[in-house]
Amino acid sequence: MRKLYGTGVALVTPFDQNLNIDFRGLKKLLKHTAKGVDYYVVMGTTGESVTVTSEEKKEILKFVIENNEAKLPIIYGIGGNNTEEVCKNLTSTNLKGVDAILSVSPYYNKPSQEGIYQHFKKVADTSPLPIILYNVPGRTSSNLTAETTLRLAAHKNIIGIKEASGNIEQCMKIMRGAPKDFLLISGDDMLTVPMYALGGKGVISVLANAYPTIFKKMKEFSFDGNFAKANQEQFKLIDINGPMYEESNPVGLKALLAEIGICSNAVRLPLVAASDSLTRRISGLHESIRK
Image 1: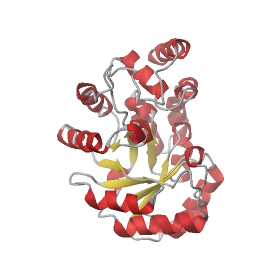
Image 2: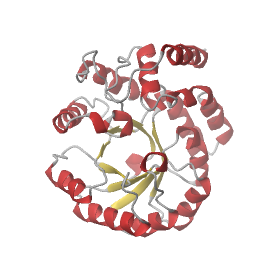
Image 3: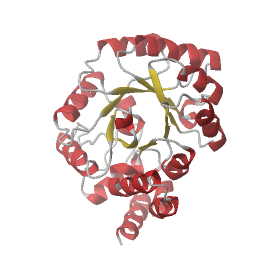
C-alpha cells in the first residue's frame, strides 16, 4: 500500500449559505489540495460525516471520484458504534474507485478492548476493501490500545491505523510490534514529523486542506532523513493549529478556507460558524504563514 504513504487530506464538505453541498467549492478544494497531497480521505470527521445524509455521502463520493484529476487514491470513511450497521454500509455502498476504508473506533457506548477487537474483526471480515483503523480517544471516549491494535494488525484485511491518541509511547509500541507493511499514520497534524521519525508512513491531515504544499515538503524532507528541514516546515503551522479546534473541527478550518477563497465558512448544526474573534485571529495567522 505504498500509494498511501505521505499525506492524506481529510476533505471538508463545503456548504453554501443554505447548507446545501457546494460542489463548486469541493472541486476547487480537490484542485487546491492536489498540489501537495498523496490521497483523498472522504467522509471523515472533518467532512462533517455525522450531519451529511446517506444520499449526500453517495453524491460526494461520486463527485470526488469523477473530479479526481490527479488520479489520487481515495479512502472513504465508514464507521460507527453499531457493528451491524457498519457492516451493512460496507456491503451496500458502491465502493468502485475507492482504495481503502477508514473506520473509527466505536464511540459513545465505550466498549472494552475485547469488544473493540471483535467489532473491527467483524468489520474487516465483511469489508470488500482494506481497513484502516481510526483511534481518536478525544472523540470516542475510549482508547484503542497498542496491544489491541497489534492483535488487529494480524488480520489480512487491516492494513494500518490512523493514530490520533497523541500518545507517542503507544505509537512506538505499535511500530515495534506491527508487521513491516502495516501503516502507522498520524492523526495529529502536529505529530506528523515525529511520526515519520518513528517509521510512520504519513498523516491524515486537517490543515492539508489549506496548506498541501507544506505537508508535501514535510514528507519529502522526512523521507530523505532531513528532519531538521521537515521540522522547519511543520513549525510554520504551530500557531494556527490550535485555533482550528477551539470551536470544534472543522469550524476553524472552514474559516481558514473561506479566507483562502476555497469555500464558505458554513457548517451544519449543532456546529456553528466561527466567531468573529476567531475568524480575525485565523486571518492574521494565515497572513503570517504566507509571508
